Image (cartoon, rainbow, N blue to C red):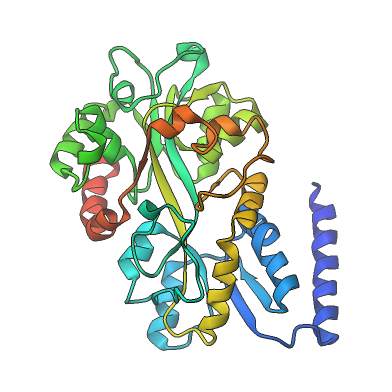
Length: 349
């Protein structure tokens, strides 16, 4: 969409919002949702926030600037203006009972959520995404390597490997152990010495991506041969940019975002009702048709998911499901500082 056209639409939207406010249609409760903006924020709005406003009469204000530091400042100052945040699982675990309050399970029904995703009392798992291994078909052909063992086997599969630059919570750690012979059910607690020793064997072949869009660029340009990428970004690269990549059927780490509520919100019950709405399978299924994330509830019907997306989701790709491992956010919450320190000194320092 041209920028001028977008600006016109945004301007019109703002005028409509101002008119609605002046007409007195927003006199009910207000919830501030810190979405993070972008395509993610737009999808959350269409799947959850807009329908909830229409159904409940609650006004939802979107804050596109997701910041954990901002939440901390608000809670410590006892001036909390943010009501709900879709946070990374490890941060939910780490801050539960500190910056974040437990969910009111009388108002929030989590019975449809995979129990493996409920790793603390404060987070309602909203969606899942996978970090999987994808290979350049121009380098390896149509039947290339997508396992952790292959990712670390530079002799059989030479080439540049790309991973996320951020240490937390980076599945390269788990993948290193899987490649070194650790069974999936024996990964935790992670042996960091063993993991970093294995990573050192491919350090000369590693490159990094920062934002998810960078991983798409690397795949579309063909500048890397193997990549550990979020499954949604891999799908976007292949579907929208004709990236010469395939795979995802080996081991993958399943990660979740959780809806969390800061301590000190003005109307916690209203926030809990919104979260409960977002746990409903029909709304979660809608989200997956808008953006390539998977639902957290097991009974979400994915019949409307585009056919070309299905190979990228564990719920619709049996091969991917077989290799899927739920990342232990409790371990990551407890060991975040230790991982970050070693990551900086041994990999990117």
